[in-house]
Image (cartoon, rainbow, N blue to C red):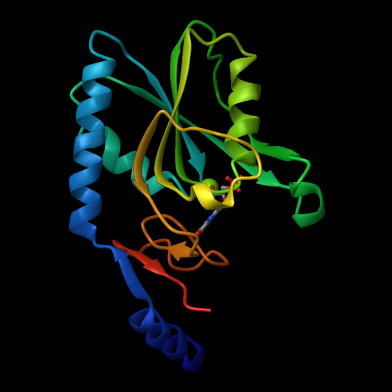
Length: 182
Ligand code: IMP
Ligand code: MG
């Protein structure tokens, strides 16, 4: 319990980078763009576990088109191999995506390795189309070139938590996005 108090105090010291209201407004406009671009379609939105869960759930509730959802979980092998772009699928999709309009939904693009791998892997499964939606983008940290099709916010090279993003599995439940102070 003493530990818990220490953590609570730390949260208050984290600077807010994006308020819940700012995120909500941006998610709404992203949903409008997607609803417009995919009108008369029924895309499959694939959330990348676990970080994208909150973003995906808010985003789909603002859409005016029908969608399906599925989830994929990936993990990189750790620092030494991360540079080689080795990504492991921990939980795969429940269905074939052949002939479907697919949107990968991610919390953040950092080095670009995860999405680079996912686009290549899912792209080889013959979807009709494949695009990437990310809430956040940290372009300063790229190891491989990668451009998301839809991006909520471009942010500076800081480690952020909240709105689904974690630091050692903590802080995912915060409704705003905060900076971890080193
Ligand atoms: P990438 O392969 O380096 O682009 O990795 C993206 C993944 O790293 C994201 O899906 C997050 O899980 C994690 N990540 C990158 N930057 C942050 C951050 O600032 N906060 C929390 N997680 C992050
Ligand atoms: Mg993630």
